[in-house]
Image (spheres, rainbow, N blue to C red):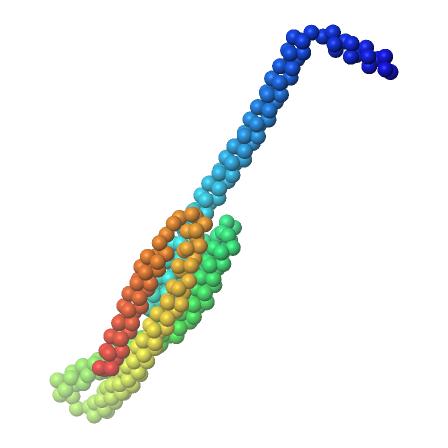
Length: 283
């Protein structure tokens, strides 16, 4: 064994220094190339990873924009749905369709939103849904009074037309100088009946109309309060979405403008209700 080792050492001693220098240089070069390739691969992996992360972020941002912008629009439209109810138009189907469209749009946010955004928008959506039902129930009560008042008004108009027709018959009777007491008495009784019924329906129509106006005045105040209740939840939802989209915003300025708009709407509705109450007081 020792002899083998000595032979190997003798072989190495016989190798010229130039050969050792060439071998050493080759090893150094090979090591440098290996290190360079390793660093290059590491940098390429970092670059590809960063590029993939950027692309993923861009795709997510694009998806969020496609969802959040309609959500923000739906929130603004939903607020206006409350004040629209003051028109007392029979648009239940149209309003319900808008409400369900709002719910469908907001539900998409659950897929891409973070916890804060989902929480803020869900809080708004739940509150709006509850308020919407309350407002519609209160509106239906007034709509029922309006329909009853219209029935009484139509009956009043019909009896008035019937009375005028009988008055025409009475005038024709007098012009013909007829001497028919039973006919005269029948026409007179008809006129008295129609005028009596007209008076009763007129009185009921006025009563229902006055009650409707009173209920509508209270309804206006109710809608304003609910409008403010829902409206206070809008800025937190907007801020959360803008934060996710990395869109800067002057929160103070936004709140100033938003609250100003809310106050102007509230003031306009209150003025309308006050004018209605003053008008009712004069009647």
